[in-house]
Amino acid sequence: MRTARIVFACAAGLVSSAHVTGTATSHSGPTLVRVPAGGIQPEAVVDDRGTLHLLYFSGEPRAGNLFYVRSTNDGSTFSTPVRVNSQDGSAIATGTIRGGQLAVGGDGRVHVAWNGSDAAAPRGLVNPATSQPSAPFLYTRSNPEGTAFEAQRNLTHRSYGVDGGGSIAADKAGHVYAVWHALAAGGASGEDHRRIWMARSRDNGASFSEEQPAWHEPTGACGCCGLRLLAQPPSRLFLLFRSATALTHRDIFVLESNDDGASFRGSQVQPWTIGACPMTSMSIVTSGKRVLGAWETAGQVSFGEIDTAAARIPTPIAAPGEPGTRKHPRLAARANGDVLLVWTDGTAWARGGSLAWQLFDAAGTPTTVHGTVPGIAVWSFAAPAARSDGGFTILY
Image (cartoon, rainbow, N blue to C red; front, side, top):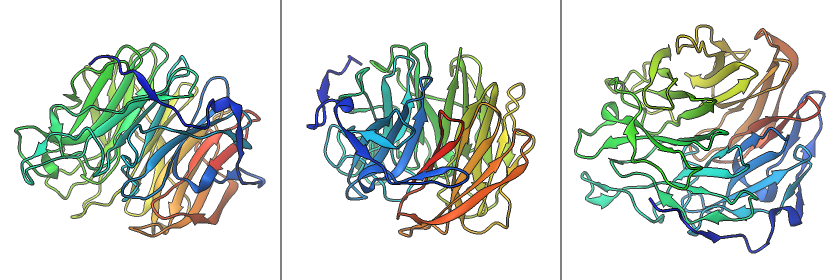
């Protein structure tokens, strides 16, 4: 694939030229910050320089837009928003799972991937069940300054039926990895035949290889559930996803690659027998040399450290309290090993809910820092980030 020319920049001009003030609420624990411009579905990354990179959705949920901002003061103010998708209305928020995903490369370049809306172009492969082109899995990258994004590209060439959300990861060596789950062109249909697909770039996203199956075990993939990928130098990858074996075994699996994604090994983390698609999402972060993952099962959110020598999570830690309507867990970690677990409570299809959080120490023990507030919008969730002063910010 030839390098795409940078074709779109927000009319507001340079990202660093203006600032938008976020609405912040201070607590004895994390600082709560509203996403700029009433945006939803925040995705946050803090780079090595302490800059907070934020992606969010705005507009009509079935056909809206993604915007990118950054903050150098832990979310007190943000840069002027830059639209990410080059085609108006080509992103989707409906269902909560299918929105934009964010990664930042070693050169500061921002990489974004998302499920295309029904209006998005280019389209994916034809779905034989409908005889219509399917939704694409789209990608774009910024210039190193973050002031403009290239024309969006479709990464699906051997797979179709993209549904639940994908993920993207990047490392300092110029590698970019995009993953999603879908059906194989010419293969069997059904959730139990969905596969995890990966497209890799070795030139900072200028071009991608044709997608390949990441794992060959016949687990299927939960059609409307998300997955999450993390890249760790020099060539390690970690991935969380939910299976759909026999359509009812919707278990959490962790995968690990030590060869730049050429092969994966994995194991079941937590089983869940349910004859429906629960629309769940995951999170993976690093904390020093530790790699931590979070997920939801049966209305409870949990996290755990990945045993990187065996591709497993031996000791899941559930959030305190009874299971109920807890969803969309997200993690942030600081240098001393403390971990902030954030989730939503009460959200459902076309229904907002509350934000909740719990701080754990390095041993995984809950601390006295926890809380809940209303205000999670329809189709949204929260994004925690470790601050430069040692605290945490939660964007919602």
